[in-house]
Image (cartoon, rainbow, N blue to C red; front, side, top):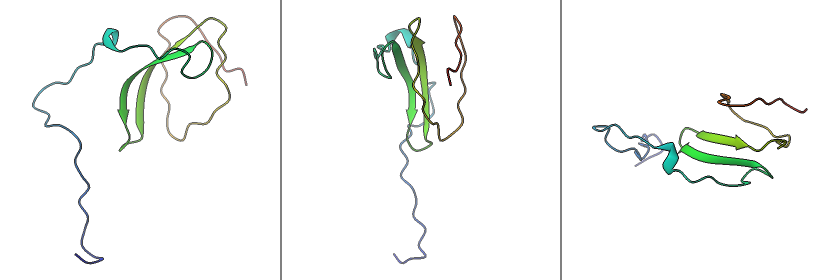
Amino acid sequence: MNDLTPIKPPVFSLPQDELLTLNVKDVPVMKDALGPGIHFKPLLLDPEQGLAVNLAIFSPGAVVPAHLHTGAVHGYTLQGKWYYEE
């Protein structure tokens, strides 16, 4: 091997001959994980892609502290309403 030899990244994914599914009811809630009244269920974590999919559950009156996302964020409100305090 020399400096010009390409490095093949490791493959961490499974063969995709089956549909991988997740029942969200089977994922435990991480209570107060992001602050008081801010709970979530991690549904997908992919460190290679820098991707995380979480089901967030906010208690009434919960306030999300100011924070920064380094990539795109897609949020869908399934119930209730919310707003950015800042």
